[in-house]
Length: 386
Length: 84
Image 1 (cartoon, each protein chain N blue to C red):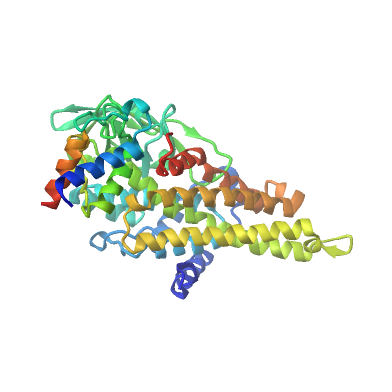
Image 2: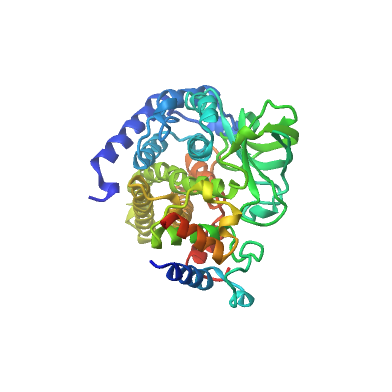
């Protein structure tokens, strides 16, 4: 049986769909307008178990396989229209918590994971800078050794959850060259002297998760807060972006499942020239394309998740993860463009959920590697001289 | 796999999959791979995948240090130590 046809997966999806209906449904147009992130809702999400998935049982996690996580995000995201919130949960789980559970010392895990799993502390992933994203080696943030500590200086930009993050995973150069061993990742408590949240950015989509800067001005961090060890930053980065590409991408499935149902209903009930618009071939073709995009996206995501669940390493799945992220992002955006066209002027209204989903989808071609970078990565795996 | 075969296999992989610059085709076993840019961020991931799939070894994170990947000689030595 294929993983996307597994009744066990359907059961998990349904369970989280229902949890979202019970606790996270409703019109969120107003919060979308104001860009309101709710810590109260965050804690509720932790309460229903969304932040314990894949986490070690020693620290309050449940160590469920990655296929279950993808199913939970799919079901939850279908009933919860708040795409920014779903994205923030996935980012916290894959980018922050999983990184800590895979690479940080037992002491750091003990200190931080239970607090994050219970929703009491929230993390940010401090990698991108104003002048460095895909080109990691051009990073300007530095960490200089000073006795038993490192002194961090630099500014991280466009960081999810930055305005209210309690902790940050911060990447810095510990060697000035462009070697794969020149980066180191640190866990920084944002209450440390010299650490601050910087400015905040308004976005067109994923509006309910906020984005901003993290500023580090002579921040002294003990060596014990190194994630992994000195020089392992690139390894940490490729692992966590791999998980984001493989798992966080499933946050596209909920909106596609929901959008498909709503568009089919629309084309069956909206009449023009005494016929439902779905009877016109230009509209039925759009629906056919949307079905194809939704179904193939599910297959790509669950296929990769089942490989990871069976124990294949992220190293071995790195190209597959890039393919999944690229394929689903491209299809998600086109899906939402078609959905908006089907809804016509109603979809264009700011109060419309259709353009909310479209605005959210546009970010998928950017986060965790732009689509251009992912195409390079995929081609490079085939030995192209890029 | 004999030691010579290991080195030959690593050398072939690096020259066919990781070398993008014609100047590096004449690579010797002691040439610096990181400093010269032959092994970059994606290159190291591909190389680890190759070693794990073809040499039946598992590269631990603690072994991910520049010294182990600095040259064809160094990579061969790492694999030989793990197989021994």
